Length: 188
Image (tube, rainbow, N blue to C red):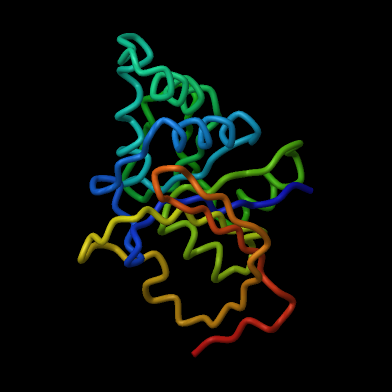
């Protein structure tokens, strides 16, 4: 069975908002490799629709190699979207799941050769509550947003994590790699 990896960008003050982050070439390269090394990525509707930003770059490249490479990698990876309202993903490499997230993830783990990524805040929270995340990769950008959606909002769960490594980017962003410990997860 492969790992479920929660990989998400966030601001220094803990908010997940792609509209305030400014990834550079090095960050695009990192995520391009991460996508190429995974079997699938899970999205909620909102993040999935944000990621559709990359589709036009497939036919009309930006000229920025790191962005164009990322666009190809995000297009290539199978995407599974969880939504109550979206019926059609309108992206050849994406499908809207009609099953509960736990059921879908357990099956993916059994049939995957590589890691499965989780790229949406809402799904990270759901899978955290189910105790199904094997690794958290939190890319903290040196930006204070001052507001937005906090990553771990309304979890009501105390989860103890162990820092396993870090990766520092020249632009000041840092990826913190965490794994859940064997300490008991408790509700508050």
